[in-house]
Length: 388
Image 1: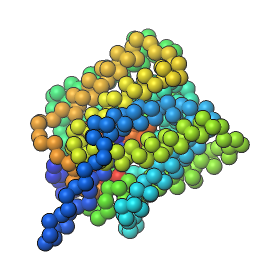
Image 2 (image 1 turned 90 degrees about the vertical axis):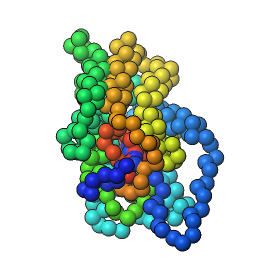
Image 3 (image 1 turned 180 degrees about the vertical axis):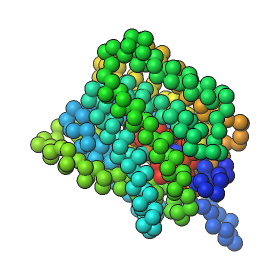
Image 4 (image 1 turned 30 degrees about the horizontal axis):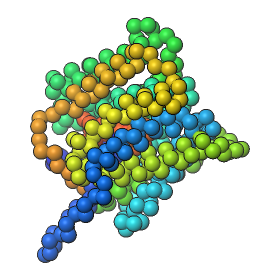
């Protein structure tokens, strides 16, 4: 999801750095007489963790595809949310984080879970019943384009420059190239592709909602993200039995794919994104967005034998160029995000993935919390997640 996952913001908006994530800043420091203890040095270099996050969210679309070969789409989404929630709840227990206590916060997190997790994750699962995982991964990369277009309308403090508007136009030209518009979209499953694009659209909508409603809750980003995934799991636990029957068997490969999708793409990826944003800042961390479609395409072609016509990689490259331009801003110091509430991020995502593969991919133009679907830049709030 996404991956949100995420400078001072207006009083009405959450403080900026985020699919989540999808992916989490440290709790706000409380002034004390003694100096705070030095930050613990990460065991792995940030480049290694960045590469791991890219691989996790990039492979998420392949895992979704394999999962849907043994389970219904809602079951895939429920399984991934359940596994991802277990990972984050365990992380909260280790760090002794508490769940939010405010009923209003829980209500807003329920809406965030719907927009950043339950809906986009389910849409990607349904989309991959009829479209290749490569196409789903490329559709996921359009999230920054939707984010810029929406933020220009919904966020008065985020007016686009000419360069970013040009990036938006270039990006959607890339989308038309991927879809083969000059051929009249022949051979394209419009329903599945539409679902994947709608899933990507959900992420920036969710981040804008999160940015407007989840400021100053007093809970850490990890606690908010874990709570959001917990609510998303509950939502799917209610919906899944209404539309599917209980599985009669548990095929090994699809089961392992769903568990990996949740534990790695929707759980571990959030924690990796949190650490990256904290260590190298949101600008560098959000670059994972550009590796997700490349890895998703390579994985689909190499491991699933999916067909790849020339316009798919060419269009994907144009989409990424446009997305990069939509994120261009005046040069500023790349600092770690302020803690606070801020995925769908997701990835996943974040991206996710926070992408669609994890928490929502992080909409670069919509300051938000580190993701997740998957997805998918981290700011302050619950993740993505984006990756898918």
